[in-house]
Amino acid sequence: MVIPSRLVIYPELLLDLPTMDGFAGMGNGTVRFLLALNAAGVETFDLRPAMAAARFGTDGDRKDQLFLRGDPHWTPRGAELSARAIGERVASLPWFVRGPLKEGKDFQLKRVTLAHFGDLAVAGGAIPEDLDATSVVGGSRPLGALSDNSRFVVVGDSFVHVYEWKGADLTTHLARFLGHKLALVTTDAGAIKESREKLALWSPADWKSRKLVIGCVTEQNLWCNPQWVKVPLFGS
Image 1 (spheres, rainbow, N blue to C red):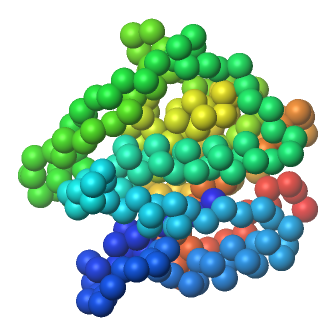
Image 2 (image 1 turned 90 degrees about the vertical axis):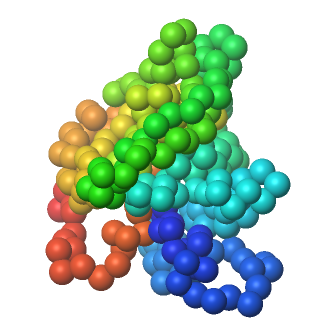
């Protein structure tokens, strides 16, 4: 699953476009990459259409966007929207059975406002962004959405767990939509390679009973980079 960059969803930040009718996200390079993975037998999911359709908030509120103003990460709405789209895709698979987690019994949903200090905001001394979010809570704290033994594994960088302290991150929302707790393999600071190296260290016993690995790749990690290397996930 590829997480689009801000400019893929909001190209008007750089381009003067005459119309946005039918817009479903910029960037054909990522599509070619996904098609190449399909040809190699890897199932892929493109978030661009879902995010492009919800670029702005309710009633077209242009201030309510899917990415932060002072940070490359998505807003809580972007994380929740993406988790819903991924959850719908997983739920459509013929073998999928929803897990035991249930709203009202195991968790509740609360609308909250949280203050987020983005990377650029901290560097520039700017005030934090106030963000509306759906918080997934179990009792008085965020839902414990992780289980190392889960059949469902999420792999990614900070995008997959930003806002976890409030239960408003992609992983927690995905557990909410699937009804399953998730195993999480992650490293911060855009270190998508390190996350996969962690996965590569798993033994056959670690893989036993796993059903699905959801690899979350931020689009900027697909740009040409001299540091690209192959990571042998399943040995040679």
